[in-house]
Length: 195
Image (cartoon, rainbow, N blue to C red; front, side, top):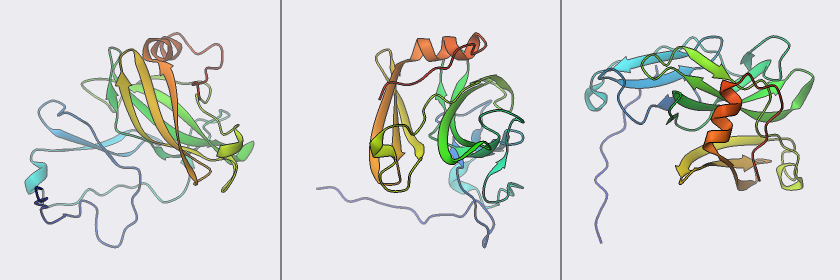
């Protein structure tokens, strides 16, 4: 049996600060490591040349708790980014969780496409939540919570692994091409993942 050879962890945010929902892109962008540290009100990304020898801090202006999202939309209060972005034909698929001011007791999941070379640019964004806490197992515990933690593409399908009610781990799927088409064509109708 092999042994893990862990290196000493390094803080990338200043000591004494609380930062959540930061993501590392799965590949370098323009030759640098890219770390998303806020998705509201702008997409904020810091680029690092060498992540193994990074000695500085990323100073994110994002305060704790919900952040302002799009006015008069389902994602009026954004909680944060979900799993690591996935590279698609349209750009980087970024999943995020948000709250509707008119339905404040429920975390819902949305999707956006970021530019491949400049992921601070949002190209497309879901007009509706793509996953809502409407099943009994998403309401048995802390009610009304879906929170994406992982995503992968297997074959033609996107699989999103998420927490329900802070109690269970779930998976939702959709053909990736269908979700991308929904995002690209203006989102006229609501789109829901299959649970």
